[in-house]
Image (cartoon, rainbow, N blue to C red; front, side, top):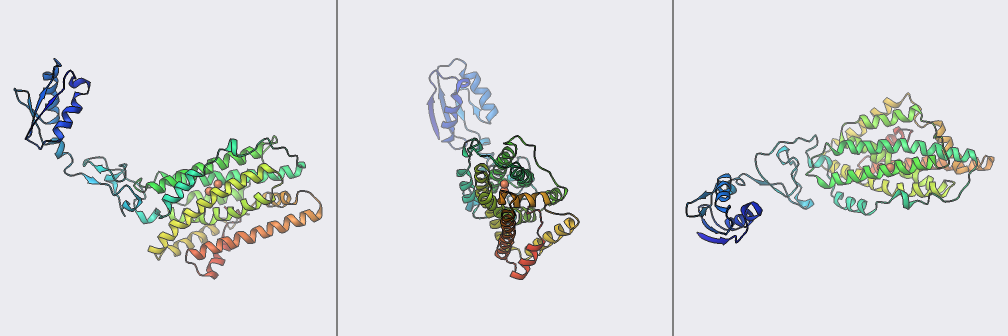
Length: 390
Ligand SMILES: [Fe+2]
Ligand SMILES: [Fe+2]
């Protein structure tokens, strides 16, 4: 087969190779391309270029197509499909950092990830949750009216600051846990990485707004109790993705949904009400993803429930000697809902916190039942959950 192209004044060193390659692609190996052109350096450049590409240049100026370009793709394979239904069970190290759905040239580096199995991370709702999360990003600067006028009694302000201090600590751990897993998951499961990346970005905003509210009236920040930090440290120590997201997202962030809902209703100032409402919307998605991939995994792995139970029990044993929720945080929750030191107000605040704790327990039990635990076991496991809430 033979074809002809005319490069006119275009040299090979100024993009002419694109036209030559395009013309060659239409020919089979062994096919001949008659190349014409007026650029004086063309014959010299063409010879060097042809040699480097595995083609032959005859003295007549006719290029004979070699097979190197096609050979390069002989052992290539397609890395699954672009869409979520193209996700494979085990993408493996040779697909490493390749785009899902791309044609992968053989001979690239092997890139290992700790988590290379679809069923360990996947949820069919991941693409939808990511899209929702991306569409729901808010700007801490403009989504909150930081100049809203309010003036609280000093002790009530201090209670708000104490709760905000506690929230910042919890948000930090809620950022670090998914961020650590992010780099350990095979990028073939693209939508899972996207969900976790936006989750980490959500937590970054939560840290921001809670810290800003804590310092809004000049600080200083509240106390950081050893018990709360001990509880958070156990979340950082869990190396297994299923168990970590069970403890963090299902039990911890699930419990936080109630806490943030409480603060949204009972906080004594508009800034605190607004930022806890914004954070609660984000947390709803974090819990939804944790639930979705654990439900996916539980449906395939009958031993999962046993491992989840073990994780709650182990954590409870480790934290047995700690106080869990600091008294300062508990008292602050009562006082900020009470709004004053009137005995009747304190009674209302105290009752509200008791109701909050019942609501947290109900929510945990409901989620545990959804993961397949019988109701009595769900109640027992919920009772073992950390008193730090997260
Ligand atoms: Fe958060
Ligand atoms: Fe979260």
